[in-house]
Figure (cartoon, rainbow, N blue to C red):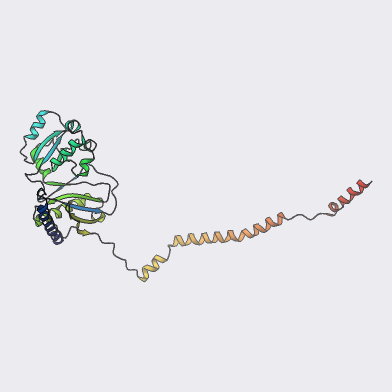
Length: 308
């Protein structure tokens, strides 16, 4: 199963047209308004996922989301100057800053320092060996801005290729709720490019979701300033046609169950029939016994003896 490409393309054109009108109206009143917005793919599930996954799924995009002008920060585990310098010398123009975990704990310990760090970069990449320990170090601010660092293998033989591959992907994070989102493009893209990204990414995300398409309720696209445009909605199960034969089959209980019910009814009837007999016997036993002639004459003898 996959999305309807014509419907996805139509929704992409409508969203980009709305974003362009919104941007032009804002530029008339605000000279510092952003010309480009991020487009999110919103996936709603039918059932809540029991576990939250800190390590995101890597979703390849047909049209890369992060261009050469994008700003990427790389977080590394090592504290050696040689490894940090080697990462800085990589021929990847998107990487603007390389910091270590130790720097996060010391130089970016305050809330204001972390807030500025988040605002400076479009994406954060990190050594996959420390990805599980970062949520506690980074704090809530990174989660609110949806900029949780994505893992890369910094021990790969071709490190430049590994990082470029990470930059050509988006990342889908499975939370505890039923609604999740992933960056799928920008408003600077053409509608066919955005539609291709949505189509290709959704094919991969459906495999990451528990139970796949059967657990997906709806899919939509939106920007930070727009409503969600639906591109997929799960229909309810079709009604079943009940025939006369199937109705009789459903109405008639199985033989084993009917035999058990008959036996239970007979047992109940027998117990109810024997109960009145037991009650009569108990009532008869509880009645006073008639007195004999000797017992009747005994009080008279005692009275005569007392008179003497």
